[in-house]
Length: 59
Image 1: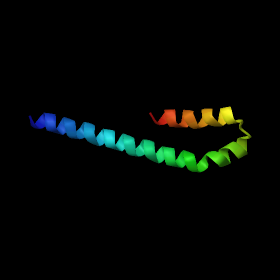
Image 2 (image 1 turned 90 degrees about the vertical axis):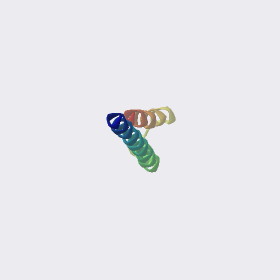
Image 3 (image 1 turned 45 degrees about the vertical axis):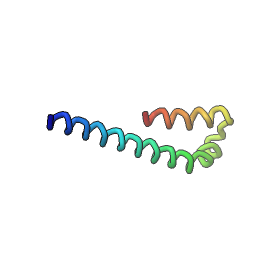
Image 4 (image 1 turned 45 degrees about the horizontal axis):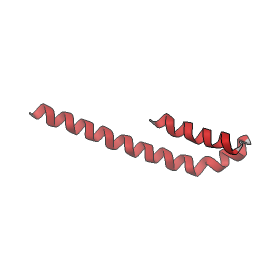
């Protein structure tokens, strides 16, 4: 029974850490996206693609 509790604790911590890192990455991208669009002269479509790929990369 103790092994099950440790496994559930491990899964809970892993899920919480994953959610934290996804949120952190989202905040970083939202702060840098305008500069990235200006730096690389991205169209609206490629700008959206770059942001989506960065968020998809965190998964």
